[in-house]
Amino acid sequence: MKRFYSATALGLILSATPVVAEITPESVWEQMGRYFEANGFTVENAALDESGDTLTVRDFRVRQQVPDSDLQISFGDMVLTDNGDGTVSLNMSDEAAGTILMQVPVPPEEDAVQAADGAAEAADEDVAAAPTEDAAEAPADPATEAVAEMETRPVEVAFTLKVPGDSTTISEDGAAYVYDYAFPSLEVSLDRLQVEDEEPKEDLGRLTVTEIKGTDRIQEDGPLTLHQDVTAATMAIDFAFEDEDVSFTTSMKAAGIDVISDLIVPEGSNMGADIVAALGSGLDISGKTEIGEFQADFDVVNKTGESEGAGGKASWDSQDLAVDFGLSGDELRYAGSAGVFSVDANLASSNMPIAYSADSAKFDVAIPVAAKPDPQDFHANYGFQGLELSESLWSMFDPQAALPRDPASLDVDIDGQAILNMNLLDPEAMEASTTPGQVKLLNINNIALSMLGADAKITGRLEGTEGSNLASPVGTVSGRFEGVNGLLDKLASAGLIPEEQMMGARMMLMMFAQPDAENPEVLTTELEFREGGAVFANGQQVK
Image 1: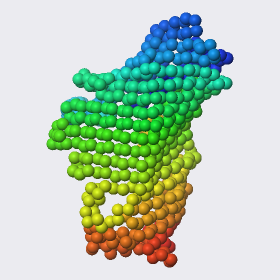
Image 2 (image 1 turned 30 degrees about the vertical axis):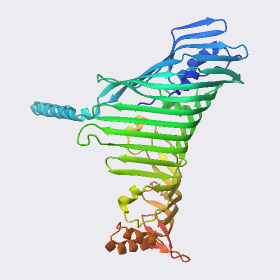
Image 3 (image 1 turned 120 degrees about the horizontal axis):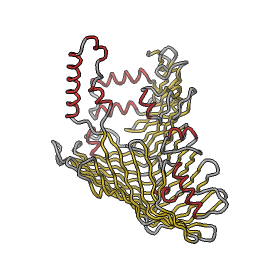
């Protein structure tokens, strides 16, 4: 997958602003070039026409070229008008056209492997026939080269962007320019997919967003900064693909959309040319998206082979979605949450409907990305509340209903410190080594699980000794478990633990846990990890 480190479609249209005493159409146009350049784009136009208070940019086009990818968008004519009240109006053509040309890896084919084998055999024959004194200079292994140098092929995507009835007004606020805009609708259609010389696929899908309103605040006195606050009433995505092997369709709908984002681009940086260098110079990207309601449907059908006619359908409904993202030269952060949601799937491989729902779910991960000799902080949090499985799922492993159907919940909260030996965002560095770093400290703030009528809670702290990682830690891990003995009985009743193994399971449990003095239904454990690799459970050495 190719990544374009660039502004969104809205950012492309709205652009940025200069630091000048008075805003004019000319100053807006001049600054747009600097803004696009900072985002890795070049700006092209056929001509500039000035007439009174109006500047018309003829055939306005932008282009971004990165290795193996080339993005081009033609916006048509753009009109900038001085309103005479300290503001400038921006009017785009109702329709823009774009293309993305990529070089993508070719899937390994059997004939390609055979060709590599044949080349290897030919090379072996050449080596065998070569004079003895030349044997030390044997040719490179063609089979290895065939794997190392993966073949690519061109893929071209053509799309259309429609923004009818757009309204944008630009004003000054100190050293910042403020863009206030409203789009009745924005539509991006995927018009054509061309893979090398294969038959092109036409009209594959579209993205439609309605009632867009937003404000962008852009400032350039120092690093370029952009704060964006956008709302939209609805969003819909419809996509369909079909070839000789498979057909795939999907439909997604969202309502109540709110997007807030911030961008800091240091002076002299180019996000498109080298994002790793830009991050090292101070590039900072962050944003949060909230969606009130979301619904998605997927449908896949296989058309060839033993599974012809088989496939599957799935749907997902959710409320109160949120996604939070941040990227800087030091840290990558990604978080998300959902309110009440449900998943319903019918897959040919399972031969039965699969459905589950939950009251809420969340995740939050932050990891360091820069190589530094000193330990850096990280954290991870994941959890869900009120998870319930459908009866069809329960019947797969508990047809007699021996197990409690209580809603399950999980909370995992850990943090710690790690030393990185390389930049995690540098592809070349990551390919050159398999050991990016080592964890030095792990705090288990909370691991809590409630399901099947039992509860477990674990906390602890583990630290690597001098010059080592957590492969041989020092520290303690404590646990509290309630209802475990009753759960073992129910698992045996459900046939999930054979009777002849029950005694062994209980002995193993008592080896690491002991009854609470005040409540025999509660088991506790404390694992102590000491230098040298020794492990103690409740004071007794087990390793």
